[in-house]
Image 1: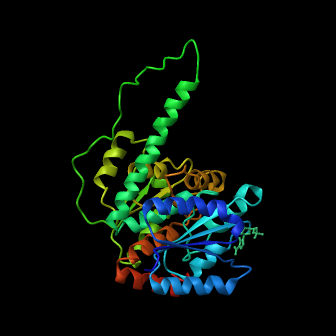
Image 2: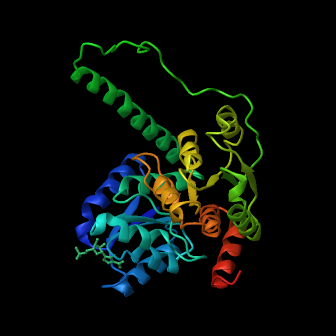
Image 3: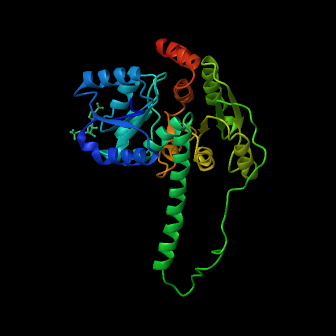
Length: 335
Ligand code: C2R
């Protein structure tokens, strides 16, 4: 049987990060293959593996590398399948590898997870596969409950440890807080939901939308902020629950991206926008999500690459999108 995921490490020294990914893929019961190959040291091996695996039907690649992490981009150059980048902290706290993964030029995209976050890469791969595999979808939901339980257990342990004269350990502790149920889920078969936090993100959002049009992907674009429209956002997300992929476009603190992940188990692609600090604030607040809650982040202002990633995900089950995606890639960024 052809594995669904191929993990490629730039070096066996990245093993600890790869093990975070393999642990999750085992839990999700997703068949995978594990290779060590370097775009610098063994270029032909990378090329051969990726070309063969793509032909065989491997669906998602996870590329793990530190330092000048060119491996994920090199893999993405040889395949139109999603390539998730995992930057490894080898020097300067992994920032070198983070930028090398995330700042890919259009139309070659590497949705990137946080530094050393092999676990989030595997979850994102699982979410992508779950869009057409109900068993994996069920396992993703199960895994999410484990992360929720971890929070509850953590609180119990913390309270058991802390002593104080003024602490009220029982306050609101008999209550359980559940997700609000909204009855009205729109049953349109939407491929991609683009959500931008503000109309000031519209230039990037429009570029994303135009490229989705070019791939014949159905999408909806809306502007809604989870902090300014706090009541409306949750209800809005419930209505759009059927979308296959979410694209979050946001500058500053990027709460919109994190809120989508909190409310949906679908793959979320994040586009950090430059508003302040050259977009670094938005980039870090998207890519550095905690374990269990990935945002596949693309380069600053690179809405077009978010559309490419969405196209790669949809192309797994849609031949027409696959053809359009390959055509766009063949134009080498001219469009
Ligand atoms: P060694 O420990 O083998 O010297 O590797 C590896 O991923 C590792 O994190 C040190 C670091 O170099 C990275 N590496 C790359 C590439 N090949 C190896 N970034 C590549 O092709 O991008």
